[in-house]
Length: 193
Image (tube, rainbow, N blue to C red):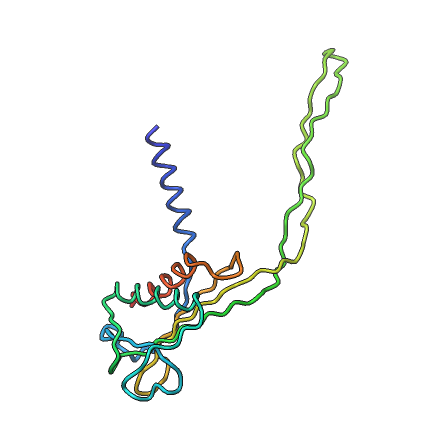
């Protein structure tokens, strides 16, 4: 019984490891990211001075994204500052519709036929398993959300690190759970050398 429980736990852990969200990163290899400890949110083209104001947040979704980014960066030991930050942060969320072709395999129905065997004097079943007939192809419109986090050098306003991830959205807006999973996947890439 213990073997079955351990085997079930092992299979479940493999399933959940496979479900983690994939994030992608591009970075400037000349920058030493271990020295970065402070950040500020970029406001736009007016960020040339050393003091920055928090950007205006226009939606609840943007607020949740900013809160998640701050939470995970603070876990790394980073802190937000108003003067002389090491990097400026810019978050961008894009939701777009995509048309996908979905191929569903089609199989015949399994059946059992009964034949009379005159030699044995009895009825004998013969099982016919399902056979593959092909694919049913249809198009499906899905909504995908792409979350991008960009870090910029405050002196040159050039990007030095950018991480992004894409996930399918199952409602009208990106849920808080999806936002946290996406931000965590991106920030986890920052921990890697």
